Image 1 (cartoon, rainbow, N blue to C red):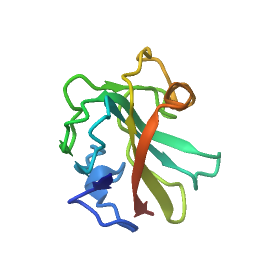
Image 2 (image 1 turned 30 degrees about the vertical axis):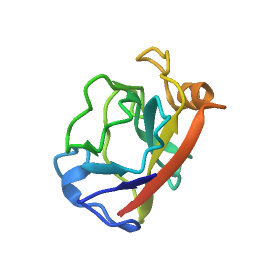
Image 3 (image 1 turned 90 degrees about the vertical axis):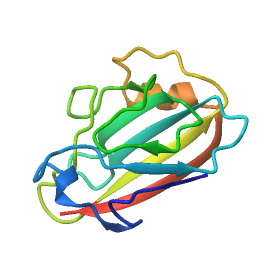
Length: 144
C-alpha cells in the first residue's frame, strides 16, 4: 500500500498553502495498493517534533477502501474526522513555533469499519484499530 501527494514529495517541503501561513487546507493525497480484503482506511497526521510532544493535525476513519484520492480541502464521503490537538474535528495545518518539523501522514488499511464517536481522538482511534491493521503506509512532509 502507498500514500503520496501531488503537492509534495516524501521528506519534501509542504507548500505554505496547506499551513497556517497559507489557506490552512488539507493537501491532496493519492492512495494505491490497498489490500483487497480491507474494509476501511484510517488516516492519522501528526507532528512528533512539537515542543509539547506529539501534535495531532488530522485524524479520519471509515474511509472507503476503494478511495484512490483524498482531494485538497476535502473529506471522502462517509469518512469521519476525529478531534485533533487543536481541539476540533477538522484538518489543522502545520504551524511550527520554530525550526523545521516533520509531518507524518499515516494511512492504515483495516479489516473492519470502526464504531467511534466524532469526539474520538488519536488515542481512541489507535485503540480501536489495534489488531485490525492489514497494512500501513506513510508520507512525511517538512515545514518551518
